[in-house]
Length: 163
Image (cartoon, rainbow, N blue to C red):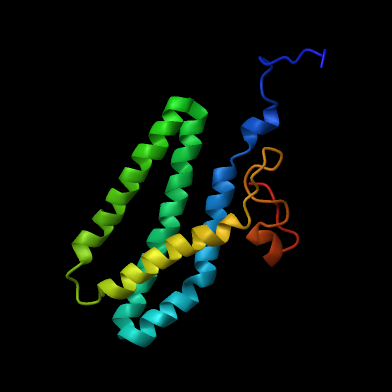
């Protein structure tokens, strides 16, 4: 316990290059594509073609929402801790606004059905986040996904594991 720890030493360069939020968001977007056939099929079976289009539109919004959230966090982390906190808080509010802006103009369209849209939006957001928690490393040694748990690594063994 006599050894002195240099608490002012900068982070290694590799820490600054890692963006675990982008890796996780990309993995979530890919998992959205994997569950899309099921959600779209449910929309088609219960609401016909309108359900198919509405569920598909919701799935696109889910993937975009995850990617925008990661982009905001990446930007904020590069600027400062205060910018990171602001990006997370105001980014969430902004993304809710984007979802609202994506729905309001089409809510009365002939092809739009609210039930399959809402079900797909809520189930995939919450379900994918719950699914992803099994693959996220809660360790500073492996920020982001646990080694070998990235969805691309299971689909293509030669795929790169770093972003």
